Image 1 (cartoon, rainbow, N blue to C red):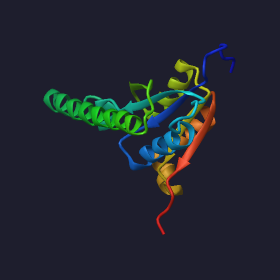
Image 2 (cartoon, rainbow, N blue to C red):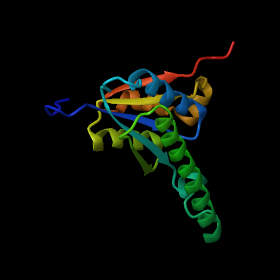
Image 3 (tube, rainbow, N blue to C red):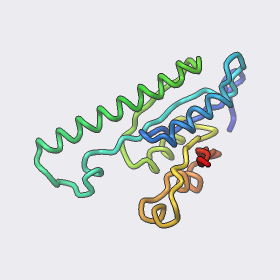
Image 4 (cartoon, one colour):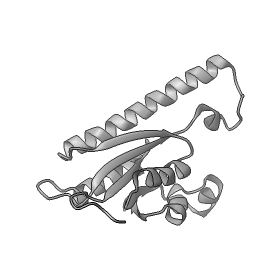
Length: 161
């Protein structure tokens, strides 16, 4: 991608409330944004927040009060996730980080964020699903590896021995 003379390429890091995504963020900060180095990328962290209707799986299911309560809970979880990501960056002394929350299916959100920000690299954590779980739930990293219009780096959390 063509970058301006002084403009750094943009890296997106996807976070959700899982240990796997925060491992990927921490790995990225440690290896590509090491303290005291000239960082090669501008960093944007993206969190995909599901809509209440997608969380329920059926639009219109439940009372208005239930939907309102669910949406409130989802916003709280999203706020905690975003704050945790900001705290990780602060602890690693990485500044000038943008954090964005986008609503929708994480697979689509991440590909849309790549397009919106003209990202050069998308970093995702791997949940380590087996073949059956991946087939049933779908793999965000697999989907993005095939559909994102940039390079995709999938960071795997080491297995405990």
